[in-house]
Image 1 (cartoon, rainbow, N blue to C red):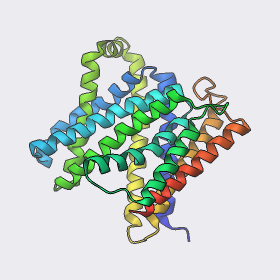
Image 2: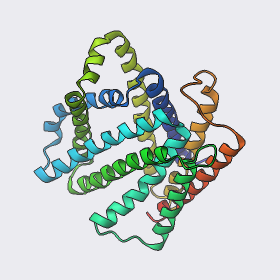
Image 3: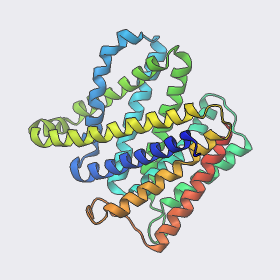
Image 4: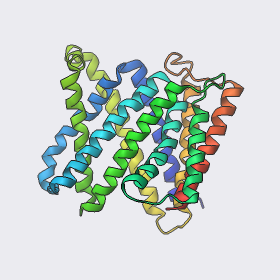
Length: 304
């Protein structure tokens, strides 16, 4: 009998691939400006302030760290959406995912004093090589812009992860810490409204169109939330199985395969939005990069 946690993990990565593909279509077809997309994603997080009194207040230092983690994460979303707008989703998502553990390890070493051992070093090399290989153009030239966008997004996500880890360690409640972190993302929307008022004016000036945008955007975000819940549930179900966590982490490669599959299916329906290169050379390059990324992820997961 196939293990339940394995089925749930694959379902989670399937939904994450749906969300990533949805982000690509939305940022290319429905919401053209990444700043507008981030503004809409972060705006509902402001309502979380209502629940803070029920979950309790954090100390000043931890509260600032939590708000900073949420702010930095949502700012990272801007670079993710910018990357999805300009490059293949089968390039952007794997490259960012591969670089996040690299920056997380380096930041933990620099600011938390955690030691990088030989295995972590070898995993970093594999992840970097995989990310670079996936970022190559069809002529096997390094797309520096694609790699730069991926690196910036990955660095911001890694920074948010390190800060969040410190908040979770200091807080007595998982939900309390999560509430404060997510609330921090709301301030990115405030910053966009303050420094780019044309984004807000554009949304107000197109109420009917924006209602449609909001529906598809928040439906896509809802799918992402379900995916994250399933991913964490699969980890919880398999907590007593030693090999489960490395397997779940390595299954991230399934997400990349789903993304490529969705791009292939949708390329005729959305030719401008899903401009993926499916030549034999491009497939060889992407698959080789995915193998390196998954190998690095397996090494990282086996050390946890």
